Amino acid sequence: MTIETYMRKGLNGWKAETFVDLADNGGDKEEGTKRQLRITTSKHSSGGGLTTYVGACTVGGGFVRSAIFRDFHKLAARSADRCTEKNVEAQHKAVLAGLDDLIAEAIAYEGAKQQEKA
Image (cartoon, rainbow, N blue to C red; front, side):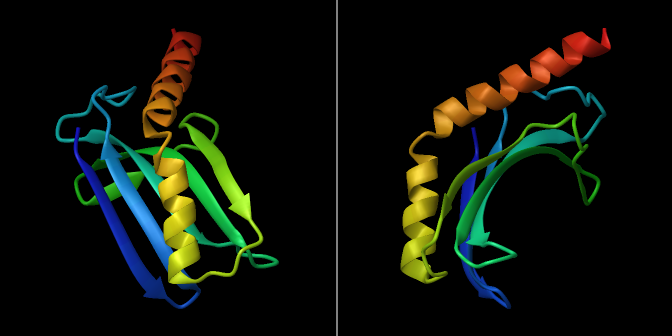
């Protein structure tokens, strides 16, 4: 399993992103694609504070695709903390501590969606 984490400061403050390649390719069996879990911690778009979202997507051919109501998506954490590097890093690490559970939850969710299709 490949895990990559990036921290950077953008227009809306600090942002942490972690990309995890999922062992299971999920529903999209297209050649050259892979399933990925993306964990993003950043300033909440309305009202401030920090949010950490976890979402599954398909990566391939230079594109990232995510399907509403089909791909796994979850609000993993929310706080009223300011968007400082220290706070973003702390909240992101707290969510990553439960990474194995998040991966299992994403795979189970997408497995259930595949059974609905069949």
